[in-house]
Image 1 (tube, rainbow, N blue to C red):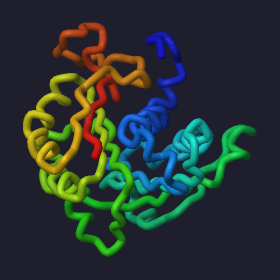
Image 2 (cartoon, helix red, strand yellow):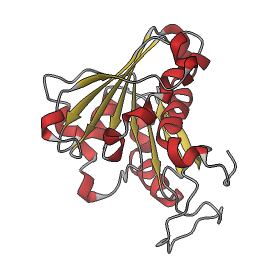
Image 3 (tube, one colour):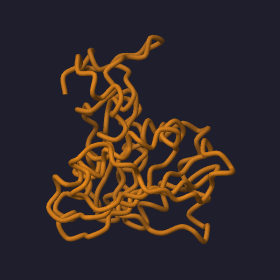
Length: 221
């Protein structure tokens, strides 16, 4: 989408998750009736589920996937909402043709530790928005090693290209050892269109220096 479009300003999270599904699963979506997606590191997303309901309509563009199950993980989910399951609201008439999409809120300090929880169910895809995969404060290493060992496709976004390249340098060989394919960082077509005002970094593309969901990368199996 062009940088002047206001659509991603509101819907960049939902559009990015849909883009991640298409990047990571490709033809696999034609063989599935239900798609389980883990969205990790959730904060603001849990407070605006109406935006995520757009995914129910977007999935009509895929050949066979009928039902979407989103599990939202993160410490930003309120304790009283832990385990809460909701059906995503329908925003417009096109949603009436789609099967219900559901979201389950799961509070956890970090995704790596939740993998040992009895409620854990192996997903079809893991998505981390603005993930900061190499940031030590986010404790990603255990989770990343687990998802690679389990051969789970994973797509991440980050503000800057450099933040996408570092995780691939760290774990790219491990992905390939497990038979995975690396998806190199690229500009996310559904990035949030406003640059961060405190950006002091740049990359080779210049105009896409620091935006929420600005760059997208990952791996598939």
